[in-house]
Length: 147
Image 1 (tube, helix red, strand yellow):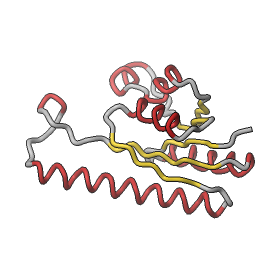
Image 2 (cartoon, helix red, strand yellow):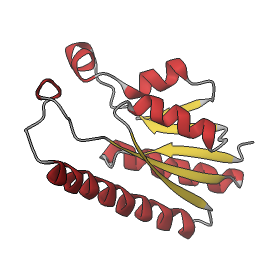
Image 3 (tube, helix red, strand yellow):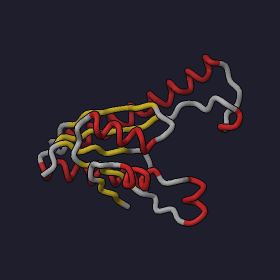
């Protein structure tokens, strides 16, 4: 059925459930797993919500985010290995999470994207957006959404 599954994680409780389901699905199908964490860049302008910092401080903060992402991905890889699932961890730096997920899925030649949806509605959805909705709308690869 599926040979290569991408699961996107942001570390949230819902995301952890999606990761668990993706590992189980990969184990059932005998598929490999690509575990993705998208790391944002530090806002560079006042209008993006930044606090003016030196370049060295920005690099330090982005480095911390990247290291935290790698640690989170290692945890997922250990869980996958415990279920007998081969996995690959991928960290991508991007401000547009949905685009990064779709691009990584294409690059890694996955045949399914698994991700969580927070189920926001109304003004929260308008203000916070929905990365899951963007992936559903723009991906040519099937997407499994879990809540």
